Amino acid sequence: MRKSGKKLVSAAMAAVMALSLAACGGQSANATTAAETTEETTQEETTAEETTAEETTEAEPEKTDSDARQADIVVIGAGGAGMTAAIQAVQDGATDVVILEKMPATGGNTTRSTGGLNAAGTSYQEADGIEDSVELFVEDTMKGGKELNDKQLVTVMAENSVDAVDWVNEIGGDLSVVGMFGGASVKRIHRPSDTSAVGPMLVKALNAKVEELGIPVLLETTAEKILVDDSGKVCGVTGTDKDGETFSIDCTAVVLATGGFGANSDMVVEYKPDLAGFCTTNHAGATGDGITMAKELGAAFVDMEQIQTHPTVNPDTQTMYTEGVRGNGAILVNKEGKRFCNELETRDVVSAAILEQTDGQCYLVFDEAVRESLAAIESYIKAGIVTEADTPEALGEALNIDGAALAETLKTYAGYKAAGKDEEFGRESMELPLDKPKYYAALCAPAIHHTMGGVKINTSTEVLKEDGSAIPGLFAAGEVTGGVHGANRLGGNAVTDIVVFGRIAGSAAEDYVVANGGHTEAEIVADNGGGDAAPSAQGNFKDGVYEGTGKGNNGDITVEVTVEGGNMVSIVLKEHGETEGIYEAAEKGVTADMIARQTADVDTVSGATNTSKGIIEAVTAALESAK
Image (cartoon, rainbow, N blue to C red):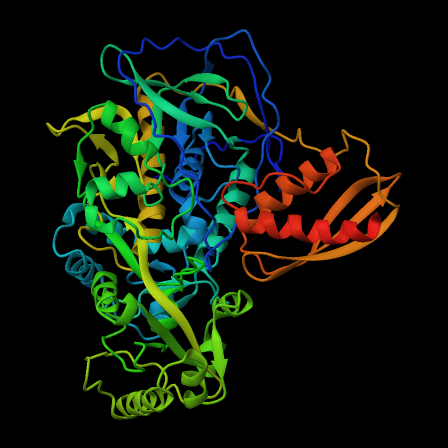
């Protein structure tokens, strides 16, 4: 993978990237095949202990007389894989790359990622005395995937995992703490130094690098068709922008990074009917658009029926508890107060075990020592979804389960920890004895988490047809692809997947451009065209500064509203515990709409619904004093 070359430089994009589209003088596409997307499924925001991004929004595009605009590489999807591919392409020398994203903010499911990045043979493992190898990484991944994985893809992922950690850290990320996750033979998952969720950290770093390199991101812009010419080569993309107007971009290569389909219940049930009625951990945009587009191009698919549930999800809020809680020592108990499985088994095994318990639910139980070891736990406590007590008996009473049985379970587990052997379920990693007050419990049930199946790719990320031939100019990376994870994805492998194959896709797309006509000057460019929100209607409020509080996704949101000349002129979030990479879209979109319309009666932002509602409630409360 080349790591040098000309870097694209344009105007900096602060926290908000505004985009303008310049006229295109590129060739017109002679399209013979096209792929249409599915309609976006709307869905409530779920909590993520995962991750963050700087929010990106866009300005009105300039209208031109040209029917089609031009780019060398179009990346469809601004999640972890898509932004990684775009960055790597520019680092390799690409001069004309554009990212299309249908949601109002970047990040996708990566924002919700809570665990870390699996890598074998890193300097961080060596410093901790951890012996690991590519071969063991491959073995664990194949075993976890029930040998259904494409071993060539798994090997490429493992071989490039050390470089993936280094690359993330080089672009401003933080992967420096190594921990244990289910399905791994050794400590392999790399997490931020503050033990927070990996997703927000990664998306924040990717956004900053996208900004630094001047890569334009067109938000609320839905790609609907990938065009190919008479010879079958990719030649363009069409779709709809945020104003509902169609657009066309001529291009040489496309990187498909649209993510999975875990938020599309119809598509989930089509491939796995027994998951009907399950909730999901996925963000609202994970609706399988890329699957539909690739299908129209004759792409081959693999493992589409392999859909993973995450075992520890709050059934009421769809908050996903990171596996780091169990990895750092937590146990699972049923409503009878007893353990029922090895908590560090693979996700499919643990999910199945939970579904066999009373009500198909269980409790994630841990003590103060586990809480102190993992910063991600604080967001669950702030969200009000964790019960706490001074003793196991009191915790049982608070949960309305047998406190004596729970106390005995914890005592027995502490004995296993002391003896170094779990006599009941064979758990090998028992980090803590779970005997330090306070004691905590969080309700859990499995939810749809990851779609392992997708388009078939080779080790160069070229999208393949049923006959094994590649679709020229079409590359794919991330959850839209199949083959890497087999029948079950190990925690920590998804982030490795998106970084490793995102980088390969970016390099491969750039190489393809060089071999098929070369670079062009960027015509869709990043710009600083944004500005502060301004009233477009006259308000009727008393001048002053007012505070209000509302209930957000992770607890209370406190806002400060400034009124001048009868108008709201500023709305600032003063205190909140919202998830980075999710709340920014609501903070920008909802507050700007309120100021423009001079009312708190505005729509929520898709993908940040609960945060939007919290801001609206807080501003409404503040304005009660301004009447």
